Length: 98
Length: 263
View (cartoon, each protein chain N blue to C red):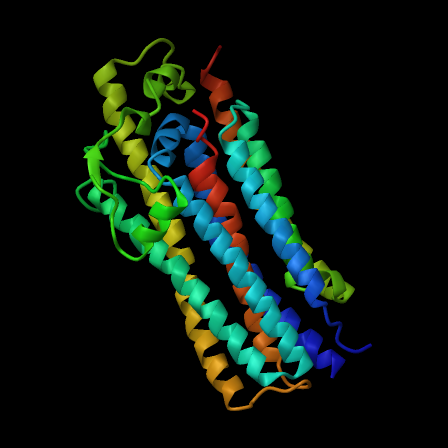
């Protein structure tokens, strides 16, 4: 298998998708969705990051070993964030009675 | 050959994974402090100019495109176009840093640089760009008329400190906190927001400066004809680094500039 060359057309398409995502996230910031503003912002950011990783960074066309390594990196990050938050989010339960 | 390429890619990703953890620690700090001092983070993020942030996001995405095209032409073995697109990427990176410089200067003027003469509530508030024309004139260094305006009240979400802080569960106090105490705490918490803002964007900018340095070396080597259809892994791996820096900004922009804009 020789090196996979991503076409220029794909790069331009992803570029426009990323610009649209940026416009969407800016527009969504001005709408009051209460607690869901952060959810929408992070969802759009995650989609944009995924597009960059899959196409600009060629992960879509990489070997399975490379895909695994990339996934593992983000899973570690997720573990760090989520386990730390289980501490911080549950601390208030001890002292706060709404 | 295939194995060599995969080894190179994996090695670069190994480095990028350490970078994910490096920035991940800061994102974690941001998450925890935003959780604790939600009101202060909302007030702090409303001081930033959303238009500079959005402009820079677009610039960085464009620089990722030009970087990807440089890799494409490297795979095609087209040296002249490699040089062109690498230098294009450098120019876009410099545009990003120029805007970051404008933003940082504004924060110094507003006395919200956390290690300096930090003042809160805002004393002065330089005019943020409100349209494309102002973006462009400010970019080349001409501030709009009446540059240091009186601090507008909308820079501070109305009463947001009292609205949230009397419910703060972390003090174990039910009921309202005296206003002076709440205000003092507010200033310190906003300062924490700006620590995170400067450290996160500062390290991001440092990564861009390093990236620009590498790109300039590669452009010189490409101009000398070092790279070919068979030999271009430096360009490809630098591309991975550049896109990674772009991804960091894709998360920094909404978290620092956007999420509390509606308040």
